[in-house]
Image (tube, rainbow, N blue to C red; front, side, top):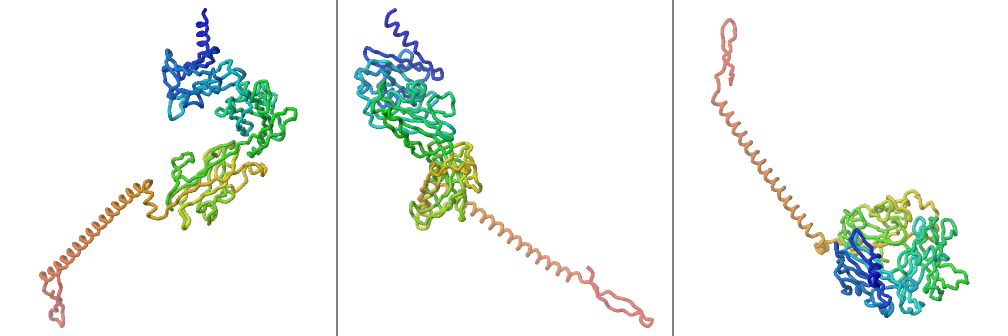
Length: 522
């Protein structure tokens, strides 16, 4: 068997078939010429683009740096020349070192230029190559480390750095074999464009990341970042992570000092904080998630709602209270529209917020009539948003007007816990005809049509009433003429048919005498 035949067998033994997309991928490592080649075939569905992640403009199908047509006979080929080392790879495809003498290329296939599709897939090609020793990795120009405490029991650590090559390993203290980048725990390489993310569930008894319990629902773990294999240098750094799952504090926590004998600098990982937004939507809107319903201007008397939405961070929901309205930041007058309990104030200008889902990540008020301040064309809303950290936290469910204590309020959460934030919305409110004309792009055409329709209906009603009145007058005239004619006829009839007086006979002194009595017969 020849070497070429053996190479082909090895290549096709590494085929990876993705049945959904009918895709076949494989890689080739050339140790003689120091190159890494990635092959991709998908005759059933040609991808819109096939590119190296973070290097789409220099290494991809649409960038013009790959060959082939995607068929089995002529697959797409991404060939990276690494003979000059990682810093001189051609084309620039973002190949990174993931271990001693081991290198990785990450490629993504997408099937739409607009939306993510189920067929979009990431592929990796790894090779062991005897590249020249890279320059010392102690030149780390910047680092970014943070962690999040996710209810009920998960610590999420994220790390990235700007350097020529990513770190050799990232691991929990004394747990290089069971809880580390090199053990394939977590995702990413730790490079600036590919952050390393590790999730540690402290409630999982099979988890071996060296987590220690330091208090009631409080856990700590130390993470190390090692730049070079088999060496501890001044460029290595450690981070102490602490999570209190009772209060879920979201303030920056300084890393604890490690034992002196480690001689590894101590870094600081910022704990991620939740954030939210406030804006005005039309009264027909039933959710705060549709950005096209957000209003930046409207007229006095328009029916609108206030909407709040959780944006990021470990929180699961929010509750809105203590809202004020003013012409602008630091301008007067400033009036309270929702009190500290989230209920409407005496002016009843704005109804309370209501949570729109079981966890309460969205909230809306009922509709209310828009208003403005005398002499100002803007209204500035400012509210306080309290954050919840569990789907069963009743504080963020239902009406935000709390007239009784709810679950989290009874938990005696410490005052230094980051549970609230200030959210604002700035809008323009029109009040006169000129302003409404300016807004004709949005509402003018509809108002004009409605106005014409109302005018036509009004004219039709007036015309109907006028016709009815004329008919009624004509009927009255006809009745009067008929009555007068009838009276004349009766009078004439009486004069024409008069009867002579009737004679009445009576006996007076034995003689007959006649008394005249006039009787008219009809």
